[in-house]
Image (tube, rainbow, N blue to C red; front, side):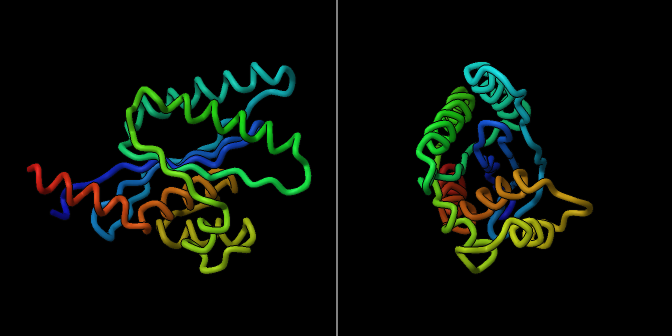
Length: 171
């Protein structure tokens, strides 16, 4: 059963920088596959959303995730920023639609709690934990680390294990 793996795509949405991280989960073992940041150009917001959508389509086509974990939006003080973030998040989710992968949402505090042990962890703590958990060498961009953290959080929630068990029962 340990040879059955589930590929998880984590997404940290943003209208200027959208992080993505891909890992394979096989039982308790998490293996880093890839990560990166989709950077959009300044200018027309609709063009930026289209760039997120198209780049996410490319990520999905290349890595073929089975499950997607995305950070849920929270509204702090700036409602306009939250609306833009929501639109970027929607563009990223739409970009993954062709994969038919399940989409799972996690609050930022839930992700930080799962990977760092504190829901109020700082970005550098998330980066450090992703390097440690996934045994990464070299720097990891903060947006990519946040996306990897969403994927790790998802794997730790037990939903990936349920998918593995379902696949094993069909085999």
